[in-house]
Length: 417
Image 1: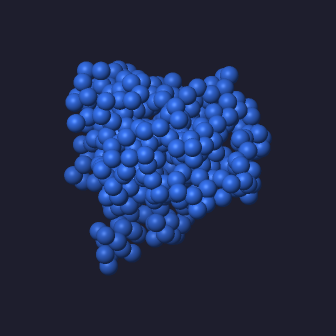
Image 2: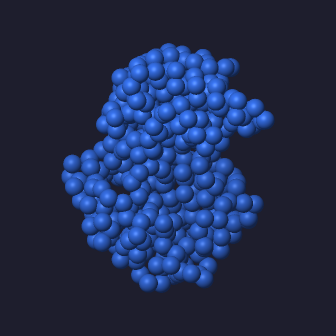
Image 3: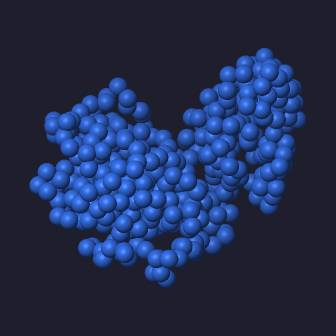
């Protein structure tokens, strides 16, 4: 039997047409077309700015960003069968597994589809050296078709060592491509924000299902499955982690969900890391008690500190502010929580977690240079728990940097304590 919501504000995130129905995207096709054009243009601009002939993409998320071609992304993340080549003049070639060449059909971002030569060991076995040499020769010939006889500077986002060695033997100068892809993805267009808002809408419906099913006697996995259920049936894609734990398994953080049975009054904490509709990420964290009973004094203290950190740090965000200055002005983490602090204060987000990472002053050696700019989307994170304590609280919100500050993109209610 479904729980009667203690907080009716959360039930409002379920589908108004009925919780048994998936959410249907209201996004008009033109929005996705405009987002594709913007994203490809951003990638081409980076290729030109770094004086490269082209960029070779193997990261499935980078391919999705540049061309919106999606082909078994999780599998392709560890089996490099799918790649794309985006030239400085904007010409784009999608190298597809033979049986999936139809996936790019009709995409205005793709100019050619060619068969992929998958030389990684799973396919090539003892023929790896021969196959990778053939792949490199064909790729260089393709580059020459548009670059002529001049020097070849090729940006690459991910490439196994045999491929890099083979290209260098052919005289190709390789350029670190992750810098290009991360900076291309940094500033979101209005259309991207519209797509991201919809992913967050789906995610929050999934969180409402989790809330409803956070009952004594269920397992962490049963509760976590509610988010997957809503994501998949409403057009989403996958979830990158399994961070949904309860009670003593919340501290230390980063334990993954299991068959552990949750108990009334335990703190449940989770991090969605959800790749939803259109390939965009909803990266949100919440914590609440099982059966939604009032928090104990200790739980309330943890939760209040986490929420204070989130609200303080979000309020600081403004365009032009340097990341280091932001860190120095951030919420001072009390000494008792310092050792268990989260790995960053903020990180970028788009089609997955992205650049930049902004760190606490205690992690000064990890600072990256940069300033906030309008159009960046960030996740503000908090993890509050004491080393050796029973529980921890995890909170996270997703915000858009605007001309005047930060706008929260998620709205799922915090707990009242």
